[in-house]
Image: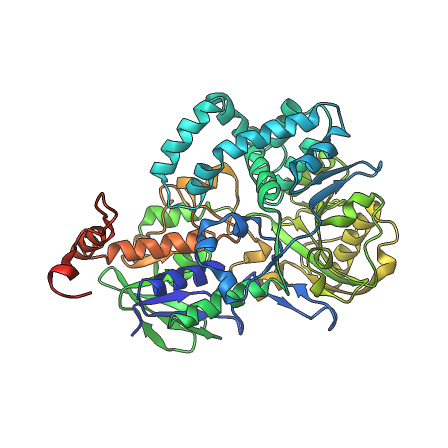
Length: 549
């Protein structure tokens, strides 16, 4: 019997399993799909000569995450690769905002929009540099992050205190207007806010856009060399090197609860896998509380709150194999790994408003990924492995494009929407469609079939809006990985701090399980062994007094 059973071999599940194995626990990971990774996988399904990421591709949060850094995945084969530029946001008039790992390059790009905007970007970057250590610590540790929050409060006072806090909760449209004279700075911030589901007018979208922009400024938007699945492969190799077990093709359909405690899981095949100490669930929060755990084991208030759970927008993605580089009208976009496609902030607002009204956008804001530009191993020289994704409503009330889309996402609707995305690319890269060798469409139902956590195409584990973050995630008062069932922990993006590949929800769940089972005497012995006297020698501990070593 393993000490812990982890449900799901996405990045959070694998991070949790690795940390438990590091602590000496025996761990078994059960994954429904035939391969591990969840949304972090790649294949050659578009064209045999091209590597295509199935879901996620760029990983600034992984690059910044102390959780991922602490695993030493480079020792298990992971290599990061970067495009020449992090991100570009071209406009139809030929102007282009560029985010680069060099602050000078980014500032010069924005200075071209309006004099003084380069200096304004540097001021925002200076604030980031002062807040970054404690801000990242607060982001990647369990809620509430008491120590890092206290340190952050001190640093905030040094950067304007309440005025800086106000800046971080501003809508991103307002933040852009307050900080920049031209449109470029606001474009970078607003496009990054829409990496989640935060409209330009949403409270807190300014802080999220600033955070994502500064992560890109400092860490870039790196990709795993060889394909996104290389990150998963490194996690799996590390886990197996520490004795952990991974079993794919094993769908869990029930958490077994006895006397108020999770004691194992039952698979769809009828197997019961007992867990000696803990069950960790890298699954969507509504699935854990609405399917895997019987309602009788849960408080009525939690079940009521989860009926108000809000998903992030659905996602529609197209992968391409291109016979040549993308013919961008603005040449600065050619060197960017990620390109944002919307003709200004007003068009971003229009896109978000259509989504809010349940209408499929007619000019879909698209995140475009140039994967061979980011990692030359992805396709033959002179070609490009590329993708774009956009958001669509879960419940479709109409089609703003007047082509009769209903959200059924049958083969005909998928083709219509993919053509619409390609027309959006053509606005900024005339001749793009002539370079398409092959394409693949991943509509919301397809994404869910690849990873059950991507419910109806939602990729963030729930909205990133303020009303479902921190101690509101996934429901009011549930900001920590512990659940109402003893020994059961939520280890997915449904828990704080939410979506993105950074491993924090998995790490938080693993640490919570370890805390519960850490004997007081062992903790005291560990502290004694770690203590050093003034001469630098270790203070004798229990092992020294008994002759052990």
